[in-house]
Image (cartoon, helix red, strand yellow):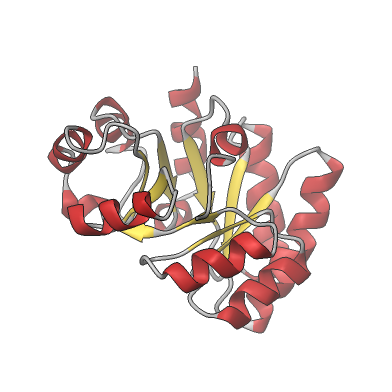
Length: 200
């Protein structure tokens, strides 16, 4: 059994997470700093290339100076788990539900946020002791999916990921999503300030 209830404290009262994918070291640091300054404290760096891993390492060090933490995203292999731990990540995020990855991450001291999109996957995750899950791709699942899942799985906490931005974040939060994770939309510099308005 694993337990990822630590996400309750990791996210705190902030219903947003920034996903900084493939931005390189300097832009990752600059974008994260902007997010932090706006009150968006949760940040994830997908680790798909050596440059991504270095960006995660630099960002994790910068986060520690602020008393914050950073997660590693797109963790789909044991090697990714090792890289994430070595780079100083505090948690891992995966696109799908792989119990071996969840357990490896847990063993390395990093709570895992696995991806789910079906009732079977939610049930499987909860049987493993996981109450926090990444709903992916959220924009294709739609807001109604979350209400449907709440009935049989009232203890589940969802992070909506995939196709999220300032234009639809509020609708998903209103549908019961605990956190909205925004990635590709951050290519637009107006997104972070617009998202930060949801915090007020």
